[in-house]
Image (tube, rainbow, N blue to C red):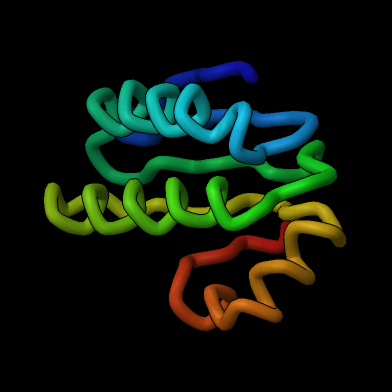
Length: 100
């Protein structure tokens, strides 16, 4: 995972798997990035090849926290696998997604 800040935006790039074993650390990293974001928290999921319900729960939690502070969380370029999970769960209609 990498993390970069640009005027009001913070970009977090993730890779690999987000599952029960990694979701808590994933959530902590997103929380840390959110604390630095003024306008948008950009979450690059292009290199994530597995996302289960634990990872989804963290995305929803951070999305709500971002909205509460007036920041938009945007999922950037989700991989085909992640896009499918977001579609199946209905979250694609609830979360902001930039397919790049």
